[in-house]
Image (cartoon, rainbow, N blue to C red; front, side, top):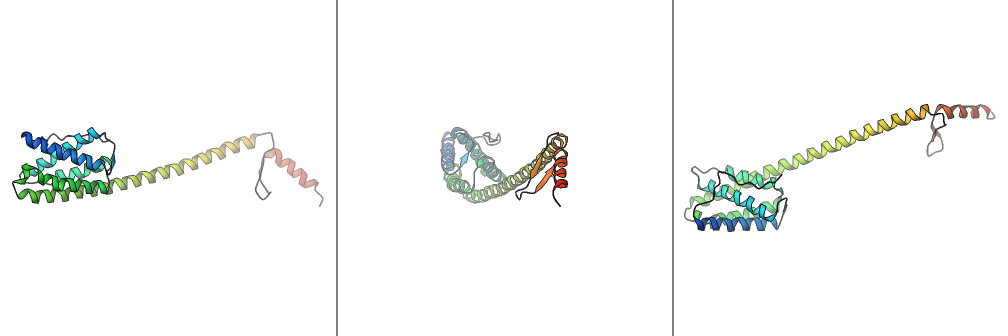
Length: 204
């Protein structure tokens, strides 16, 4: 469900210092995110996952013209990780909003400030849309499960009633069902004849 993904178009930078800076930022992101949410990944898998997503964001910030779509995709991917809710989004926005602009590769150009702000907005939109879709899918799945359970219960009841009727009608033993008020609710033929005889012999 949540296999770590490193996007092929998000290669890390060639500069060693830039690589180390990104690694530090992705590890910080992973640590702070895992402190507020639970995801179905081991810590090393989450580190690798977020390192790949960070590379994708950095590539988008460098591309001309700037396209915020990768930020939106990262927001969607956060939802796909499992239980990343609003605190996880807030922690992500805090880390990336400051962290991306703290990277030396983006600190020299003022245009990157505008791009980071727009990118964080796109990430939030992607997260919110995917989160709403996931909640709707869960509700629909729950509704389908409840409807199936109701149909199964009705089917089981009909099967049980049919099985009981088959046994009761064909039984040579007397079967009598009495309600809580003491009145006879149902009797098969074997005991029905006996009840009839008793009623006929009763004094008028």
